[in-house]
Amino acid sequence: MTDLPVFTAAALEAVPPFDVASFSKEDAFELGVIAALLVRERDLNLAIDVVLAGDLVFRAKFKDTDAGNDPWLAGKAAVAERYGVPSLLVRRRYEEAGTPFAELTDPSIDHDTMKAHGGSIPIFVQGRFAGTITASGEPDVIDHQTAADAVAAFRERHAR
Image (tube, rainbow, N blue to C red; front, top):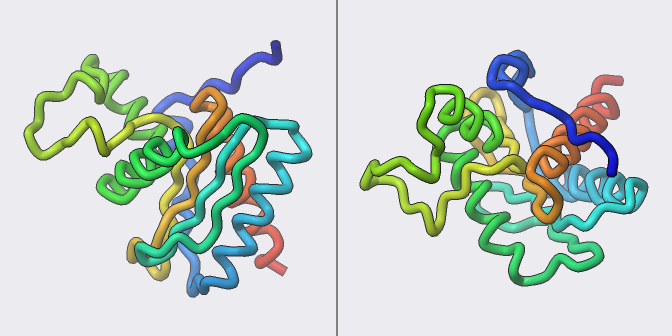
Protein backbone atom coordinates (compact mmCIF):
# COMPACT_ATOMS: atom_id res chain seq x y z
CA MET A 1 0.00 0.00 0.00
CA THR A 2 1.18 3.49 -0.81
CA ASP A 3 2.09 5.69 2.11
CA LEU A 4 -0.74 8.00 3.07
CA PRO A 5 -0.14 11.76 3.03
CA VAL A 6 0.29 13.39 6.42
CA PHE A 7 -1.35 16.71 7.21
CA THR A 8 -0.82 18.74 10.37
CA ALA A 9 -3.04 21.63 11.41
CA ALA A 10 -0.14 24.03 10.74
CA ALA A 11 0.40 22.68 7.23
CA LEU A 12 -3.31 22.90 6.43
CA GLU A 13 -3.53 26.42 7.86
CA ALA A 14 -0.68 27.49 5.57
CA VAL A 15 -2.76 26.75 2.46
CA PRO A 16 -4.67 29.85 1.36
CA PRO A 17 -8.45 29.51 1.27
CA PHE A 18 -10.13 28.77 -2.06
CA ASP A 19 -11.41 32.32 -2.54
CA VAL A 20 -12.21 33.55 -6.04
CA ALA A 21 -13.73 36.68 -7.56
CA SER A 22 -16.66 34.72 -8.96
CA PHE A 23 -17.78 31.10 -9.10
CA SER A 24 -20.68 30.01 -11.28
CA LYS A 25 -22.47 26.70 -11.68
CA GLU A 26 -20.34 26.19 -14.78
CA ASP A 27 -17.23 26.68 -12.61
CA ALA A 28 -18.62 24.19 -10.08
CA PHE A 29 -19.15 21.67 -12.85
CA GLU A 30 -15.63 22.26 -14.17
CA LEU A 31 -14.18 21.75 -10.68
CA GLY A 32 -16.15 18.53 -10.35
CA VAL A 33 -14.91 17.26 -13.71
CA ILE A 34 -11.32 18.04 -12.72
CA ALA A 35 -11.82 16.07 -9.48
CA ALA A 36 -13.49 13.19 -11.34
CA LEU A 37 -10.59 12.99 -13.79
CA LEU A 38 -8.15 12.84 -10.87
CA VAL A 39 -10.19 10.02 -9.32
CA ARG A 40 -10.09 8.03 -12.57
CA GLU A 41 -6.40 8.76 -13.19
CA ARG A 42 -5.50 7.63 -9.66
CA ASP A 43 -7.90 4.67 -9.76
CA LEU A 44 -9.58 5.76 -6.52
CA ASN A 45 -12.77 4.58 -4.86
CA LEU A 46 -14.33 8.01 -4.36
CA ALA A 47 -17.53 9.97 -4.59
CA ILE A 48 -17.22 13.67 -5.43
CA ASP A 49 -19.73 16.47 -4.74
CA VAL A 50 -19.56 20.13 -5.62
CA VAL A 51 -22.25 22.19 -3.92
CA LEU A 52 -22.84 25.86 -4.68
CA ALA A 53 -25.26 28.00 -2.66
CA GLY A 54 -26.81 24.87 -1.14
CA ASP A 55 -27.43 23.34 -4.57
CA LEU A 56 -25.74 20.08 -5.60
CA VAL A 57 -24.21 21.02 -8.95
CA PHE A 58 -21.92 18.04 -9.52
CA ARG A 59 -21.85 14.48 -8.21
CA ALA A 60 -19.86 11.51 -9.46
CA LYS A 61 -19.36 8.13 -7.83
CA PHE A 62 -16.65 5.67 -8.72
CA LYS A 63 -16.08 1.99 -7.99
CA ASP A 64 -17.77 0.88 -4.75
CA THR A 65 -19.10 4.27 -3.67
CA ASP A 66 -22.87 4.42 -3.36
CA ALA A 67 -25.66 5.99 -1.31
CA GLY A 68 -23.71 5.07 1.83
CA ASN A 69 -21.24 7.82 0.97
CA ASP A 70 -23.95 10.49 0.81
CA PRO A 71 -24.12 11.14 4.59
CA TRP A 72 -20.31 11.40 4.64
CA LEU A 73 -20.28 13.86 1.75
CA ALA A 74 -22.96 15.97 3.44
CA GLY A 75 -21.40 15.67 6.90
CA LYS A 76 -17.93 16.73 5.79
CA ALA A 77 -19.41 19.63 3.82
CA ALA A 78 -21.43 20.70 6.89
CA VAL A 79 -18.20 20.92 8.90
CA ALA A 80 -16.41 22.91 6.17
CA GLU A 81 -19.36 25.29 5.98
CA ARG A 82 -19.73 25.74 9.74
CA TYR A 83 -16.03 26.32 10.42
CA GLY A 84 -15.07 27.96 7.11
CA VAL A 85 -11.99 25.76 6.69
CA PRO A 86 -11.31 22.30 5.26
CA SER A 87 -12.94 19.52 7.25
CA LEU A 88 -9.54 17.86 7.76
CA LEU A 89 -8.23 21.05 9.39
CA VAL A 90 -11.13 20.98 11.86
CA ARG A 91 -10.30 17.36 12.67
CA ARG A 92 -6.58 18.09 13.12
CA ARG A 93 -7.18 21.17 15.29
CA TYR A 94 -9.32 19.19 17.72
CA GLU A 95 -6.95 16.21 17.72
CA GLU A 96 -3.94 18.43 18.37
CA ALA A 97 -5.86 20.17 21.19
CA GLY A 98 -6.44 16.77 22.80
CA THR A 99 -10.17 16.26 22.21
CA PRO A 100 -11.18 14.56 18.98
CA PHE A 101 -14.16 16.19 17.29
CA ALA A 102 -16.24 13.01 17.68
CA GLU A 103 -15.88 13.31 21.46
CA LEU A 104 -17.12 16.91 21.71
CA THR A 105 -20.17 17.32 23.90
CA ASP A 106 -21.19 20.73 22.51
CA PRO A 107 -24.99 20.52 22.11
CA SER A 108 -24.80 22.63 18.93
CA ILE A 109 -22.87 19.84 17.18
CA ASP A 110 -24.96 16.99 15.81
CA HIS A 111 -22.43 14.21 15.25
CA ASP A 112 -24.90 12.35 13.05
CA THR A 113 -24.84 15.19 10.52
CA MET A 114 -21.39 16.76 11.05
CA LYS A 115 -18.35 14.66 10.12
CA ALA A 116 -14.95 16.18 10.91
CA HIS A 117 -13.05 13.92 8.55
CA GLY A 118 -10.91 15.02 5.64
CA GLY A 119 -12.40 15.56 2.24
CA SER A 120 -14.33 18.84 2.14
CA ILE A 121 -12.89 22.22 1.16
CA PRO A 122 -14.97 25.39 1.35
CA ILE A 123 -15.34 27.63 -1.68
CA PHE A 124 -15.45 31.38 -1.06
CA VAL A 125 -16.42 34.16 -3.43
CA GLN A 126 -14.89 37.47 -2.41
CA GLY A 127 -14.55 36.28 1.19
CA ARG A 128 -18.08 34.89 1.51
CA PHE A 129 -18.86 31.20 1.83
CA ALA A 130 -20.34 29.94 -1.45
CA GLY A 131 -20.09 26.16 -1.38
CA THR A 132 -17.87 23.11 -1.06
CA ILE A 133 -16.01 20.45 -2.95
CA THR A 134 -16.13 17.16 -1.08
CA ALA A 135 -14.67 13.69 -1.58
CA SER A 136 -15.53 10.49 0.27
CA GLY A 137 -14.59 6.84 -0.03
CA GLU A 138 -10.87 6.48 0.63
CA PRO A 139 -8.95 7.21 3.85
CA ASP A 140 -9.83 10.80 4.69
CA VAL A 141 -6.35 12.13 3.91
CA ILE A 142 -6.72 10.78 0.36
CA ASP A 143 -10.19 12.35 0.18
CA HIS A 144 -8.67 15.68 1.23
CA GLN A 145 -5.67 15.39 -1.09
CA THR A 146 -7.93 14.69 -4.07
CA ALA A 147 -10.17 17.69 -3.36
CA ALA A 148 -7.13 19.90 -2.72
CA ASP A 149 -5.47 18.79 -5.96
CA ALA A 150 -8.68 19.53 -7.88
CA VAL A 151 -8.80 23.02 -6.36
CA ALA A 152 -5.14 23.58 -7.24
CA ALA A 153 -5.71 22.45 -10.84
CA PHE A 154 -8.79 24.70 -11.11
CA ARG A 155 -6.81 27.67 -9.79
CA GLU A 156 -4.00 26.96 -12.22
CA ARG A 157 -6.38 26.84 -15.19
CA HIS A 158 -7.90 30.17 -14.20
CA ALA A 159 -4.64 31.93 -13.35
CA ARG A 160 -3.79 32.27 -17.04
